[in-house]
Length: 460
Image 1 (cartoon, rainbow, N blue to C red):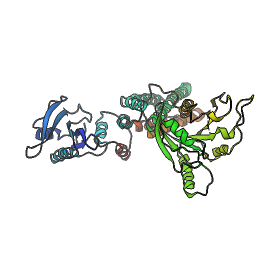
Image 2: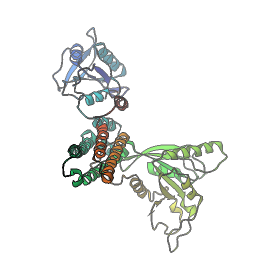
Image 3: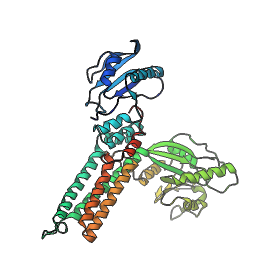
Image 4: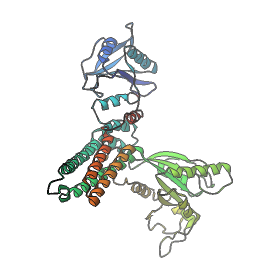
């Protein structure tokens, strides 16, 4: 346990009035604060009823008290939780008294930071606490819980052990260059590096899935005026979020809605119909639509199929060249796009022989036809169609670190394969291991550590 910390306190329940309000205290002065505030230090890990008193002995509040003696606590320090009433004034009075007794107000995330610094959990697990609090779906909550239980950390440690084994072998071979046998040349070192690289790629794929569960995706709905974009937004969200009329240009601004598709948080953005216009307000909406496209992870390009299709013949439904097709040229380079042929209910005859053809999905936002297929297509497009029970929450910094580790491993493999440069392989293995250490917090600059915990809730 770090012994140079002062004592911190914070209200651990959300702001506002409620039936319950919790003040959490952690640090070396907890026993003194408890004895002065409550009259005694409670038996550890046992709930007791007590009065919280001011300097004159008057009762400020009363409630349940829990005491955790170091190191058997969340932070690894002495911890006291005062569970009183949830009035704002009462909580302020309790906090004021606790600070009079030597505590200071905690920074955001400082309790979790102390748990990390006292080796009660690693950085991935600490971040998983915040992810669990912020989770917006059942899948995201379960993934955060698995990271908190150490699933992601265990896989990182397994990779580090593989890299350590490789480094021991390579560096031992380098230390004996005069031996008659070239241990590196005669070994299966390249196959072992390749196998570790595959394990790293698998973990990277899992981390990308975890980031989707945590952050979700930005899905932009674009198209020409009156193609049915707002109707599609309403169909996907399950509520009348956008005004729908037959008048082109009804949507003048970007409408946003957050929904859940198969456990993936999806940030929907319904944009103004893209066209040339002299209407200043509509033109601003078109500009914002194009701006939204630049930050989208996935684009639904909505067409009015009833306006751009010929009648189905022997060859099935045929797509005519329409102005909508030209919108693809306005999409950012590399963005994934699903073409949505809307208003299929207006087509004559048996028009939906194929509801999904490549990147094209045939739907009717009005009747709901094809919406479930579109949801499946969205999940598949972002690589979330097969969520396993082994998924875990991850952040962009984890993905960046895994990419760097993979890059170093690939560079080491190439150096060994082309030049038989064992020294370069050993260095790249070291750098790959260092990148993995940044994920769990074993090797991380203090300023980045502070930035990570500053995004946490106060009192956690």
